[in-house]
Image 1 (cartoon, rainbow, N blue to C red):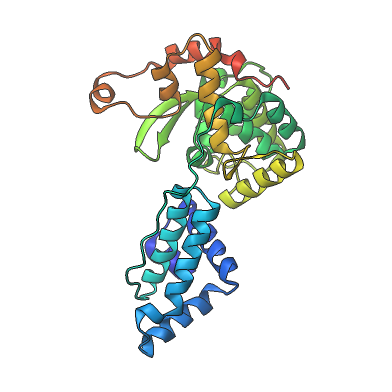
Image 2 (image 1 turned 90 degrees about the vertical axis):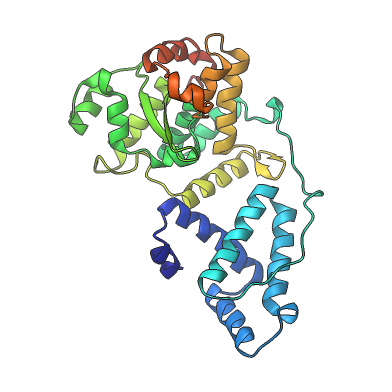
Length: 318
């Protein structure tokens, strides 16, 4: 796996995705990937026809497992990663029988499926400091998981510059720690569209971020703001859901980053009176059409004023 990562120069995020899919595959077959690769390589060398190969059956069974236990999009992603890994190590893979996805559950999420503020408040009581900060940040900013984990401490210092006017990390945090109503302006690059957008987070989230930064580590500006990886994040959400005995929504956990993002948009749309649907889309980094993006630019300070007027609907009131 390390050779695969180095050869393809994968980002940490992409690497974690491949490792997650590979773990599912090796656990399903109760074999290490090294043994699975050797098994497939041996079949090729002795000339076993594709229709009789163990590898073909392994792939078909794993694919069926994925589509039975995950949403179609996730199942497809996990399976494609496994095919990519085999092909990288020069294992021949021929056509597989097509699979029907018509019976695959595509659960439609409603407002009632979203985590309530009480659930979020309960989760914050049992979460560790970095998870508390991240949960409040995503809920109040609408930021996608990937973008949130890509933020650095320097990004946070820049986002709060109007409150501290300092280039020193320690001095900036010292000043911020004395304030209660800080609403940062984040300029974030959306990975899916490769475009920048502005969003904000609540004073509750800001206070948790500052508290987490001051307590836990030596501060280096280029370090991640939320110093956790994807596996750690998923594991912590799994534990929180289990401890709170939360039901599944379709095949997914009720409390996770994507649901917090949905809740952010839904609360602002249903109960906030100051932000238009286009402005809510803008806060979440959803791209405008090419004409709009070329000629119409949001003023972050005007958008911030509207956001602050709607802040009450996003607050948990800790």
